[in-house]
Length: 100
Image (cartoon, rainbow, N blue to C red; front, side, top):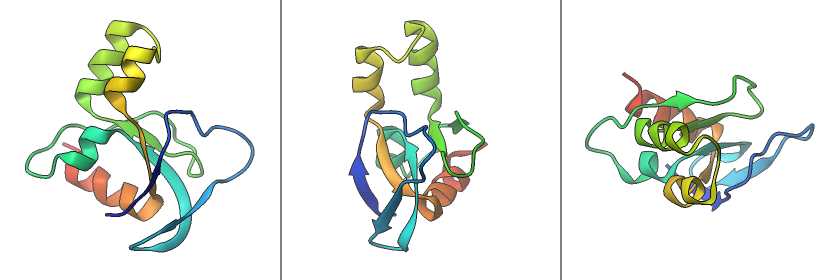
């Protein structure tokens, strides 16, 4: 799975962000937490934060707990989450790997 870049900002707006994934070529961008990228040997959970196919966002169970504890996307949450931009094909693979 190729990581195209990093961002801690919400991608929600009216434009579709395209990235050039090393593995899949030009695709729509999606966002996942760093824990999903760094953990391959066990499921970390997969909580989706958007159902818009042009604005896919998800984080792991630990990020969800941190978000609920913080009550918002605080700076501490953003540092813990360390969002990464991936393509939608990578997102689908990550979802399959980390979903229950």
